[in-house]
Length: 284
View (cartoon, rainbow, N blue to C red):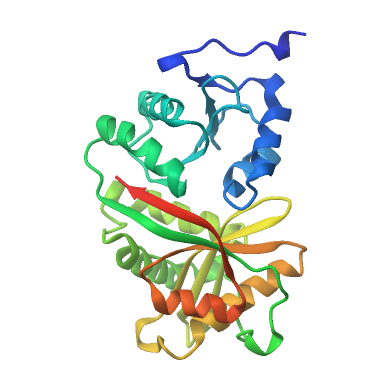
């Protein structure tokens, strides 16, 4: 059958996966379910074919090597030579520079080729941890009032999202395109019910986003507490509320935290989360 024929190879022997490789891609994603949530959601949404919601690149077939490229780069499988070639192929797509994240060793293997093509690395967060919650949330921890934001709350949510962005990435989200791309991302997350907030008097005091959802796992990101309320337990309580909402849907909550962020790690442990993957992120 023609759909089993792999597409022709390009840069360094790399190519996009073909329609006949769906089973192989699913097998690889299932082997590392917590790391591959964004890629798994893309497959659920539109299959493995490249589109506006991302694409898969491989060198030698998905069982050997695989990288997922959307608004960021997620290296999933490959040895040193594969990752070097795939990094060059990602640069050749002309869609960067963008952040790279994943298992620590995968990011380390992909990073040099991306830096060669896109320029110096701005920030290398080499000691992160992907955490997951395997036990039920203690109802006593759940912060009342944390729920999905509405589009009517877009303005205060945008303020909170921008504060979190500046603090986390040390950059202004409104510089690129006068902030239009950032506003669109925030609005899209709210419209999809993926942004959870706690509010008082119209001000957001807690925010968290659900970046991706697979059949089994909800990947949380962007957890933020208003600076004047930090140290009061709102981070743990708000995170517990988001986790409980997704556990009610039969999903396992997960998130990534910087190893140096001891208060956040303590809050997530209080919820019941444990380290499951040594992680890293590169910001270009």
